[in-house]
Length: 118
Ligand SMILES: [Zn+2]
Image (cartoon, rainbow, N blue to C red):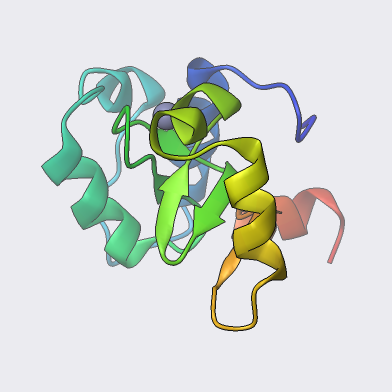
């Protein structure tokens, strides 16, 4: 998976695969997950159980790569810019008190580890 470029469908496929390894969570096909697009409550509940993705604060879509600013997550430049500029984000990253960064969450997933052969 290219960390810079993925579509929402890729995310649904990925999460659907990931769910198969979690017997304690309800399983969904990627098609079923897609039906929940825009359903913030659904995604927030699921992200409490699955550590390999977050929910974008602005567009409410599941995200596996993106920005984190003091606990709020943003999936893309467009969404980040709804809240702050690049300059403000940079400053947040450099500040001592802030907890801001750009990261990938899918590396915490079981499927990712399996693909890497671990
Ligand atoms: Zn977004």
